[in-house]
Length: 472
Image (cartoon, rainbow, N blue to C red; front, side):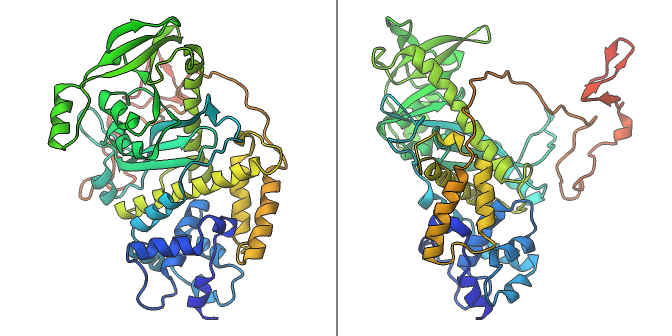
């Protein structure tokens, strides 16, 4: 068998049931990325390679390719591929193919038998944004930007902002949008309304609520439960028996003009329900489109809002348990978006596997199936090519599900941990991002000897006299 034939037989272990060869080939053909001649690195092989990079985020390109082609006859030529050839193959493939693969596999996972995924007949969804650190290259910094000082001096790593819509019960991602560091989460969240529908309850934190935001989601039939800022309480219209009240808000003039320029129509006003509750000895407010206090009690909605934290756990799974716990590896904007779509696709496939394992026997909450164990099981399935044939794939998938259920996690305790800074800044000066001709990667932007350094022990500044020397 030639190297090309060996590349056509490459699979991604038990995840091949999700990322089938037919699905991958259809995504490649949709964007015209199929090769015109036989290549050792065919387009299908490169798609599986990018997905495998997410499963082995801390391994080199060459090592991931060896793991992916291990045990396939005729794969010796593929094992000799160098990094530059793999980088060029990723560039030829582009970012749109992986985005299409993600959108083909993404979607709701919860069934009526899934514990913890429903409330009073409504599917629980969470909406929130997060940032991914990127390698400190000039192209990434120019395209995505990143944090900066009050004087406008950039520092740290460039970052991509991602807004994600995910199921609370399964952590499965339904939809996502990517943007730069300066892009607002609310503007990125508007297109996600198309992935919601009737019988969905979208829970979001502060910063999302507006008349336009509520209109975008309620048009699809979805319901909202969002933390309100103090300037979004609207005008009280009617007090309800459970202590909540109905309120009305109108879109601002700038919002109306922008919608008119874009050819969109906004309602003159929006009626929603405001619920007040205590949080950390302060009064906080929730806004919801569930207006019936008898069918949707305020006390249950306040308790339900805390379930929004499940999406933070999904971000932790993507970044730390699956990802490298730091900057991702791509140094070009196209590679960054390609890699992030692959991360979202692989995470959804792993969550689909965990959900199937949770329902394989007596149904248990998907949270009790260890995500990290599922990642390890899938990683082990790739080198031995358990998914190379249909019979082996079905048998190995069944065995893997029972292995994932072998030792369930204990029922999660109801804890309330206050937010705190657990990783204080250790450096006396800020590190400026790499800029061609000004600062080299990994170097200081300012002379560190020109500023006083404090002696730090366990993250705390040492006292000099009666005052602590704080970091600038």
